[in-house]
Length: 298
Image (cartoon, rainbow, N blue to C red):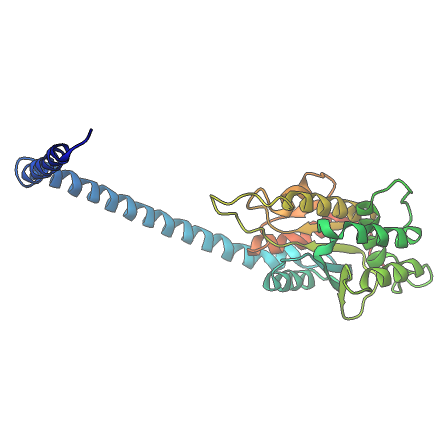
């Protein structure tokens, strides 16, 4: 049984240990401890100064590279896309300032943007799967090359190519009847999959700009819907690329970025790093490579 004497002895032991520590710290061990702490602080200060110098040097190198790339842009881009028409589609999260910068580079390359549209998150949201299935059934007859066994992702991805690139045989600058019907289906309803800005005309090439995925916190749990969503997007964009010359531009900084999953399909030309001038300048060059030397529509 624990009694008062036990508690008294315990308290005396604690105070004795504390007193010994104070005596040693203020006496024989004081200089040793002080020297050790001073040495550690000095080492940390030197490491911090070295890292600052390294960061400054890297920043100067990056600034120099960026200046060189921007100065070379005109030589790289001029007439790389002469008279080509581009449909510019933005996925959810694509930064407006980056889209504007890419648009400027496309125009510098000689391209004409004949359609601008934003793609809804419902293109890949798990909760919208049934609605996508119904829409795929509605547009199936207007999308050439699809079969009854094709998935909704394949049909709807191909429908994007039809909607923005299929032109009338009589007038290449006029949308075909199929393109008109498909685009109307994609843009109508209470929650349309596509929102078009301004007038549209058939394009030669399609550019899809995606946004970055925010890096999760170290202790955060993985979003169970993120990977299925990325898979649906990638299958849809793969079908688009199979139907029309397409480039997908975005970010590949972390494993959960959509562009990382899109590259897994191995059928889509992609450009990453579009937040910087190098990536933005590369986008028109990638579109020129996808065009493959084919003449633009008259």
